[in-house]
Image 1 (cartoon, rainbow, N blue to C red):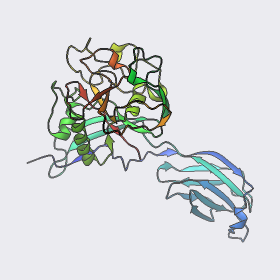
Image 2 (cartoon, helix red, strand yellow; image 1 turned 120 degrees about the vertical axis):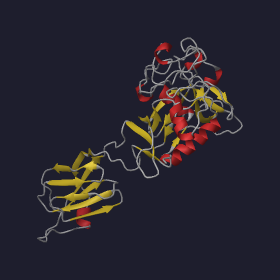
Image 3 (cartoon, rainbow, N blue to C red; image 1 turned 90 degrees about the vertical axis):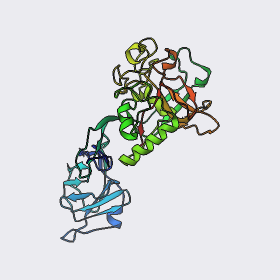
Image 4 (cartoon, helix red, strand yellow; image 1 turned 45 degrees about the vertical axis):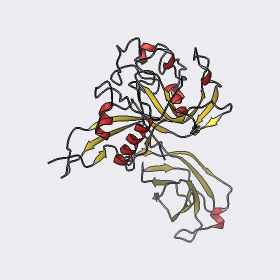
Length: 365
């Protein structure tokens, strides 16, 4: 007998290595006296040159005419004989770097500044696979993509293109997203929800349709179980993260809706949905590649809904528990106004509707 006893990720978040190259952005002689104060002699008894390399990574090794190397805080100190002119640098997560420079001089301190590559993939594929009692696949897997969102700063609220804005979309304020994060390319599908939870609460059934008829509290239970399975850190987006992505992040074209000024290009709504949600990814994506951030189903956010701050904020989250939660994006059963990227609506945490679902975010440490 085969049953589902474990779930694995096709992409293991903690162990994937993306071998990319280091880049030297500066190598120069300095007036620092460390090569003299902390002198090291070569095999002939002559003073070495000291190269100070800024690297926070552990396990870095060096090849060349290296007499001694040691880690000091966020630097590696590499001692080399006079007239040395090349060095190989090996780190665990990058391809080896061979760098040539003008022959070094004894008793002189040099500084090498390196640029580490961004090791995060722009698309992170996730696959959940049921595993049988004796190992091996025990059924159909479920796949979805998480897309990298780069940190940035944006104007949140009723900016000038948001025609017909409500009072709760004011005041417009600068909001800074200080850290990169991953967000799901699509809304959570019924297929994914059922795979994790073992049931499908949706009113309008279809494996590629977004899950709906789920409350904010239901979503927390789903996310907790998903995190237990994957050992990842999925969660709901904050309201600021949601609007930042819906607007197109650092690539924004300042559209009225997410990805267009033409609602039908990007959204399923009352006028074109034929009274039903529709399969995810069946409309045009926005500037960052995200689908259905306008229309199809409302998307629950982490925050409680309250008045906007009157100042610039960073990574803002409303934690006022006297309020209801926020949902964004509009649904298949409503008109055009609530599809705007700045439109907000509240919902009680235990309320369920056939046009309300969710989209996942994954934090990056």
